[in-house]
Image (cartoon, rainbow, N blue to C red):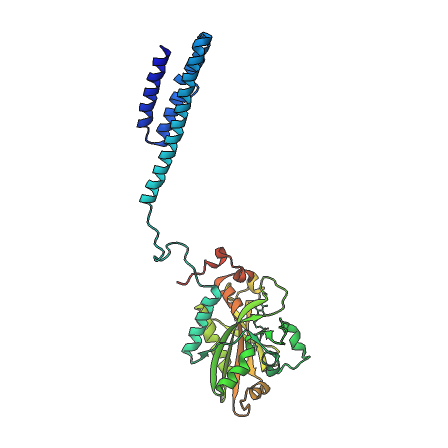
Length: 343
Ligand code: FA5
């Protein structure tokens, strides 16, 4: 009898469904009962051999079984999914926001690392580390440094002006007058800081970069002192005894002024593409502080002399870490910056 056959099939379907306790087992039950070659499909195919009256009842029974089986499979599938999710949550590690992060912790910016090195080195030589503003005025950035209005040296340092007449400082030398007025002579100070220039940007020029200014003022300070401190600092930063050389350079706030070159750290002074085959790299302009600048800072140039230097920190970091493009430093790219972890 067809009705008994259907009931038997229903019973065996329910039994198989009850045993299916994984997604895969449930799929196997679905295929074996509801698939094209399964018993329900066979029953459907058998309808064509029945009389029209028998067909009507049989069709309804088979359809009822099929609908019931489909709904039961769907319901069981949902129940299995929910159970799997609950199990995953139960077995997952509990999230504790107070624990330190395991992966991808932050790292210090290379400029910070180099600044710390230079700060430490100069501190051990008796220099204080000073802070100075980023927004200053024309007097501190230029006038107090012997660069009067309309002086051509201003062309090299175009910057961003604020409506109230203030400006973003173009070099750390802008703090020289402030430090001299604050401490008087004798003094030894370094002052790292962010500088800004209206600059055509390329691989070694940025509109925002870091310098480290240094000043030493005392009786009888000479160019020999300048060379000694520069050489010591650079040898410490690079961990090798570097040769330095001075070339004449013009800065209205120094007399005399120099460009300080170091022997190329990449080829050891033999000549390579990084030093344009000269064996030397231009790094740190410096000089003896101009008497006008000392006087403007309230220091008597007849009694005291001093040297000042303006180290390009961004360029120093490039050389120390072998970074070829200055733009990587301000890029905010974690891929580029996270390589310089403090060890
Ligand atoms: C000056 O800024 C002087 N104030 C330095 C100085 C101080 C001379 C004390 C004498 C006595 P200069 O413009 O050359 O000089 O800049 C100094 C260094 O800052 C450069 O050697 C370079 O390393 C860095 N620098 C200058 N402009 C940029 C820039 N646009 N991007 C990145 N680094 C720069």
